[in-house]
Amino acid sequence: MADRLELQGRHGKSRVRVSRVWRRPAAAGGDTFVEWNVAVSIVSDCLPSYTSDDNSAIVATDSMKNTVYVKAKNCTEVVSMEEFAVILGRHFTSLYPQVSEATVTIVERPWERVAVDGKPHSHGFKLGVEKHSTEVIVKKSGNLLITSGIQGYSLLKTTQSGFENFVRDRYTLLPDTRERIVATEVTAWWRYPFEHISQIPSKPFCFTQRYQDVKKVLADTFFGPPDVGVYSPSVQNTLYLMAKEVLNRFPDISSVQLRMPNLHFLPVNLPSKGNPHLVKFADDVYLPTDEPHGTIEATVSRPKSKL
Image (cartoon, rainbow, N blue to C red; front, side, top):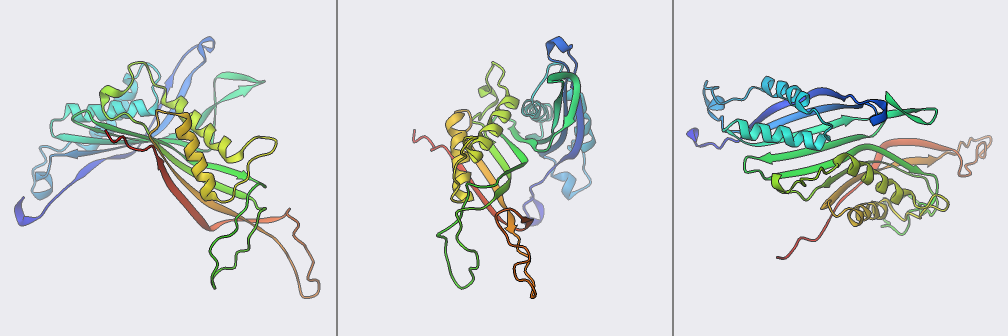
């Protein structure tokens, strides 16, 4: 281009908040309610808008915002947020000739159906904690990449955890232990194997159910059997076993990325000069702290085919 410079740009709209209700009678399961925070980013051939005053190829970000609401309205049947992201991505790459790629990111606020007297309420919901998220990249060719995940998934167990035989040098103060609290706030991303629009199953694939399935497997592997648990020699080992179990259980997931900060609960002792044993720690009183904290992360993937 002119000026012997290279220019690559993208633009979009972020923090588009949209809620959708699909109304059904109680006998059919009751209403379905979602709240999504949507971000759209497109790669577009509108370089003259950067280098001159020619805006003729720009898709206005306000138009992107309005599209989110229109497409939500057009979804007369319940859709997962992954499916909604694909709908948006296909729209932007097919309607506008100058758009070659669209990335749609959605974070779902965790509204959960309430139960009253043990019975699911037909139209009552409460706000949960951890958040479901997705990123979908759609190209004009129909190629796509679907990644889903969970954020803020807090897990803790009071025993069956240790950390020992690690590197020791003059900077090391941490003692070996086979008895400690282990706690983390899991951020997980998993990738689906669909590489083209045509590969998405014609029979509805329930991304929402798969999210619930993965969430359960992560927790079950972290905790172990309810009566005895499972020993964790390190957060690294527990992370790997969690990711491995997801891949073993779900052939429609090709890779798992986990980030697990090690949130600390430090044993409390309160000695004084007059009484060095004023309060003696006995595996019962701790100081919770997440600053600073260790950060452990890894990606576990299936081997790529040699064909």
